[in-house]
Image (cartoon, rainbow, N blue to C red; front, side, top):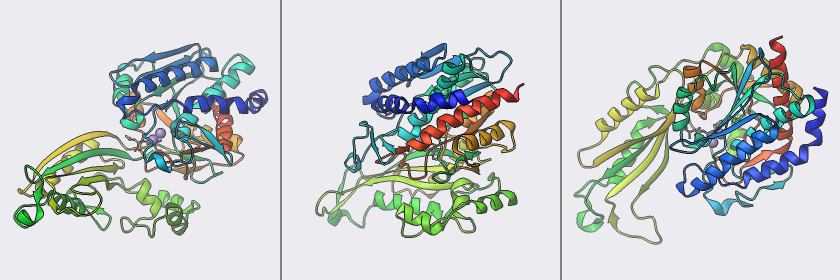
Length: 456
Ligand code: BES
Ligand code: MN
Ligand code: MN
């Protein structure tokens, strides 16, 4: 491993330069205006794969954004590691809050600022660099490697799910390696063994054919903004979701897990301060980590209705709209919860408005056994790469394909994320810590090495 480590030290600056080129491509998957950029980004990823030395790198078209697959299969008899990541990024608004352009990567204080730097382009890159270091120094890898890098993670991985189901042989592997999560704390490497699932909805209400004069008609018809607010407010009371049956399949936290969560260095006060929140809020009887990692929740992601311009306008809006979502935990099933939610909405929606419910993307929750040998190899690799033993965490976010890998391919995912909690993912001024970037490259290289040793 010494030669691999010294190669990665010598190439530090080039890695950053490569990543900056990657970050200049505005591969926003939710915006069709950027379809050309997203496609260009897929080809850029295939080039990165080729430059790392893998023999095969292919861009698969889908009805949505392309999927990039790569493979190096020169170690027969050794395990195969499937590296998954996503090259698509979230939208950048509000643009005026960015200190430097979202697609003009800029380094300040050892942090690389750009949309996608942490989520997930910088985190994908570490694995290309690790593979390259092994191949350049030894002409071979300790394991077989496959890459699966998609362009639709941020919009629910719809076409990837189909691709996985129809390419089981191509994707055959012993373990999936993913870097798309954050460390628990700066400088404290973390292995994530659980993700929440998600269902997402748009709700539209109509109360009249057109906006109405609030003097002439106020008091005679329902106001859809008001009705919507009442419906939403009654769906979560005191941190508890009121949808009948919502909690039925929730797997309770074990005593051991609660104890382990408590041992992690965490302060509610500091957390609230970092978030700029006057006070924390959530389900009674659970700690903040339990609430975000292992308890389901219902959130309003956005509301739109009526007059919001300058001054005052006396009007009753004709329509009101909300985007809402639920984060789910094992063993809640998205389709089952979706049915309960829709039934609940129809029950509480008054006859005075017309309602349209549209279901959007989502994903299943997931949890892994932490004593699995591949997870233990990841822990050792992190210790070598960062000089510090990792902690085990869960995440409140979702990576939809992880459950698909488990259910369809029957493969365990190992989540070795190198983001930081204040990385501003999905927000203005997203950043990647360049120390973590380098530590991540070393950790990935060690992981490949340790997985290779395991088979001897
Ligand atoms: N990298 C994140 C997943 C994540 C979020 C990990 C928070 C750790 C903490 C991923 O790119 C993401 O944002 N996922 C979406 C999925 C959704 C759009 C289907 C999410 O969680 O909102
Ligand atoms: Mn991500
Ligand atoms: Mn994301």
